[in-house]
Amino acid sequence: MEKTMSKRTYLATCLLPFMLFGCSSLGLQATADSAREVLPEQDGWAAAEGPVTGGALALEENVFTVSSRKAFVDALSQAGDEPKIIQIKGTINLSSDDDGQELTEEDYRVAPYNFEDYKNAYSPAVWNIKPLIKGRPNRNLDGPLEEARQASADAQKAQIVIHVPSNTTLIGLGDDATIEKGMLLLGDNVENVIIRNIAFEDAFDYFPAWDPGDSFKLDASYPGCQDTYVDASHGPQMCRGGRWNAEYDLISINGAKRIWIDHCTFSDGDRPDSMFPPVYPFPQNEITQKVQHHDGLIDITNQADLITISNSYFHDHDKAMLIGNSDKKTADTGHLRVTLHDNYFNNVGQRMPRVRYGQVHSYNNYFVGNAQGAGNGRNAYEAHLDSLANKPQHNVLRQALGAGKHSAIYSEANVFEIANGNASHAAGNMKGDVFFDTGSMFNGEMIDLLDAANAASGKPMSPDVGWKPELYGVNPAKPASDVVEYVKANAGAGKL
Image (cartoon, rainbow, N blue to C red):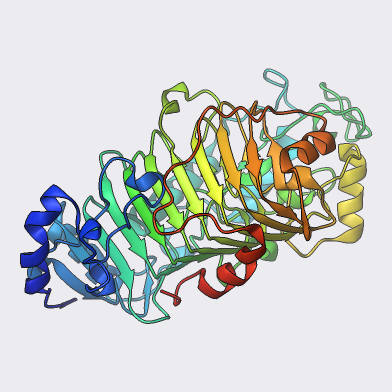
């Protein structure tokens, strides 16, 4: 861990005025190096209740350059909640020990867990034949294999989840700074964090859990599907449903507020979930029943608030971003205010973002994907057979902007290029009531996105979201015709 000399002249010039006005309002951010840049005034929801400065005011003893997990964790611990700048040099593997050796499944595994025995013990042919509970297989797995899986997961979690405290700037040096194989957690009571110019990859869960009741449905279109077991061809084991669920996001904003993420890149790295296909036979072999080792890219939950995500690249992943993680969390009302602008979503399947309760401003973002395999009006059984026949190699784009319960998404001048799709894949109704869009483009044509999405889905939403964005900072909305060129040139790590 190297300490880097801070700019005393910057501190002397900025400290007192910052207390009064914020550095960016004085035009000083352009003259400080990138590590001390702060969120521009009025740049999205993150700026709504005062400046986001991260570690801009760090004293010299709280400026670090780190290249390993140990140095990274030590720097966070040493500075605590004091302003701190942590510069990431090269690749930091969060699944590594203090000597820098990578830790893998065998290092975390607790006996008697092994995947094959776990898979067989809880297979639908074994587990689902038991009496259903409220119309689903029992979702609370029990027995020594599930206990060992959970203990193994706990061991991995203790190593790869890194807590980021308040008043922190994390910034990558050069164009190759990477944090991989773990998760940054910004928890409750954390605020004022800046994360820039870093590629985040492969928060790989070695011990995903099988949930037999996830998306389970008694669907008569599936031959043999019924609520009571009769024989190997008739019973709940012949119904659709069940999912593998992973634990880790690349960044989890879980209760934190006043966060700016800028010029970062997010992906599954070289271990995409497409490498881990379904392991059960029909009808539990639909594409969404792959063995999921990655969860979200960025998830924003549990009353997190005042967040701006800008100029970032999200690619080659299924579920990108959840804002609000439960229909039942009414306490999220009045929180989850998020701005996303000038971001690039490429070969992402869904949740760009999927929103509950929050007021989300999405503008000048670029979405590229392929909806072939999403069903497109057929019943679930026919869509399932089609996906098996066509074997899509892409992440199936199911919806880009997902309007969930009590969400209020304001979409503005976004660009959607969705092969084999329609406007309901751009704006999907996920139990939402309202959605607003203006000035967006779909497959090369200007479109009234709400009207088109309502017509395509048959589940109409109102445009009355109840608010109008005012926070654009130095990035007022561009016309959709200018978005693609700008986003391709600017989004992602290494382009700061």
